[in-house]
Length: 277
Image (cartoon, rainbow, N blue to C red; front, side, top):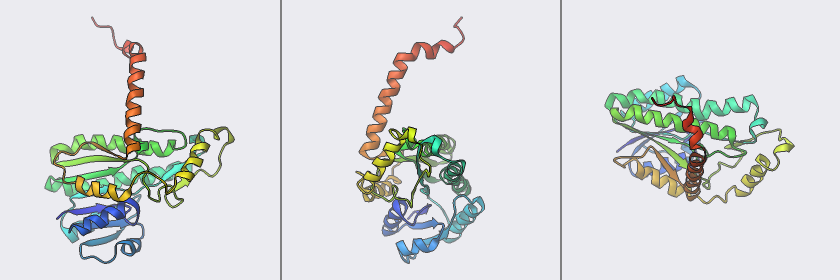
């Protein structure tokens, strides 16, 4: 029996993973800003603890982690799932848009992770799964600000992995592509309110494609949830887990593009070293 601590657990990936974990007999600490939304989705369950948590509130994160320990005695898996998107050109985003996104997607993930880590370090055991995105590996027009938050999650996850591996704690960043959830709905995706005509063919075109793709995404969220629940049993988990054929294709394309850059510009890249004596 494991104890899961899941942020953003009232819907989407978080709710599906919580359901599967409960079904196999695990304990689940499911958090959301409104814990009533959790019980409405997951029902009453003896192994479920619904906790109010705004991930941007560091004090509340510490209280939530302590509540988990008091109820179940340990936290085996931290799933940092809470987050939302922003669609629009970089110039179209307001300072408030950017700050709000970073408060949840980056600073919120940090607050929850720092709240849980002391308990994992004490027992020299644990798994941390940070939900990133296809946009955390490859950025594109229309999702620049959002991708920058997920690039931050990728960097934090790589460093955490190196810092925590000697302590028996595994860290993996999960990279979903487009899955058929509500992510492209207004409940999860903000859209810049003041579009600029000069970006109509780039960010504007992505805005149109996102609307057309909503609820027609290729990824099956139930299959993703099953993969993640099974994944926490992997004895040697990788630093990143790409999920979805679109993510795999995007990573392969970026690798090929970067390899081409190194080939074409290698002489310039290595020219900046001090001359060898």
